[in-house]
Image (cartoon, rainbow, N blue to C red):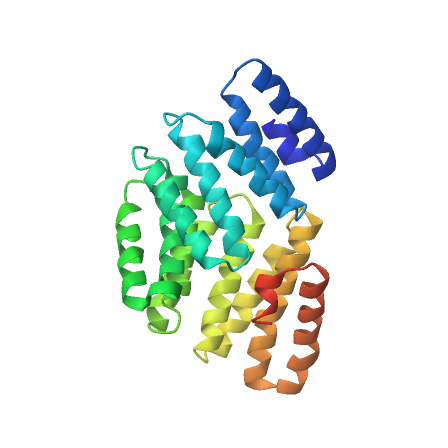
Length: 277
């Protein structure tokens, strides 16, 4: 199932995973719930969010309470879908539920990622002070997981975003750490996102001389992404930051770059990126 979800095109992978889930359910195997997780992942890739949510709910509704990891990851996946829709109330409820479901585990996917996502949205809904309390509690919980690079990257990236306005220099230090961690992951998409975030923060702080090479690094990493759709989104994100830098130095040159990003986001239905663009 994992190989199909990771290596095949979404339509083919979806059919294979549906069949795998059917066979696993017939045999009463708990792996059927993991197959449902992969099915939700594929449907999200195809922008079928309602289908993904149905697959996720099937895990939450049918998995016994003792399967805490499967249930927690299902609720976490639902939270991520709500998050991308900017449905923050439901996203916070989902992340909080995932934390409660998985509180007996030491799984970094739950302990670190959900906590960092919850911290970011808590700031939006309940204010900076409450959000920062959740954030620093999350940073403290990261110590037992020094080798969990992907989960740690999520923590430091969201820490940087949460402090960008109120504590810009602290945010920059968080981005420096995110870049360092991203380079331990053999996936250029993570490197591109970290460099893009650092470049954006430098631009916001008016440090253009440092922002330009940072966004160049984001472009270089984005071009190495193997998936065409992911590569296009990463390049648009980097172009958005380059436009932000140009606004500080040459507004006329920024106009065409920013308009191109808006057009790309509209075409790909990337609503979360469209608003800042």
